[in-house]
Image (cartoon, rainbow, N blue to C red; front, side):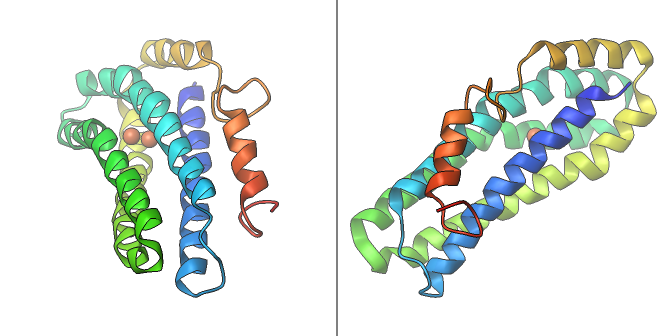
Length: 188
Ligand SMILES: [Fe+2]
Ligand SMILES: [Fe+2]
């Protein structure tokens, strides 16, 4: 009855893996264990841009949030906050991309500013996903009807999952990242 919740949850896990990968790499650079691989870092940012921003958030807005806002007054302010974060998503990822470009240009002296920007970005993403998982999912489970779920699930299942798998639109980018990344993040 809640296949779409499972799909969103799986997408959160895939995003969480990418976010913690980028954090592990940045921590390695900070500690002097890793040399910055700018192509890898920009591929990771590109993935975060393409997948959550362009695919995942619109699905939440169009299906899950759209239904839930009709059914739960309690969910309304939370949904509005999350939708606002979705709207700011593109500007936030652009700022992160610009910050990486500035670091690449400046060399080691530019790391601190990039790292600070990255940490802010990561914290916001974690908080956003947590709010969805801890506040929205329980309200959705409690308030949505069987018909609501049938409609939402149909919409979610109609889309191929672009996150993973051979058929995934972004599978190539994902495996490129995994191949480039140093252990324990990737296979490199
Ligand atoms: Fe979201
Ligand atoms: Fe989400």
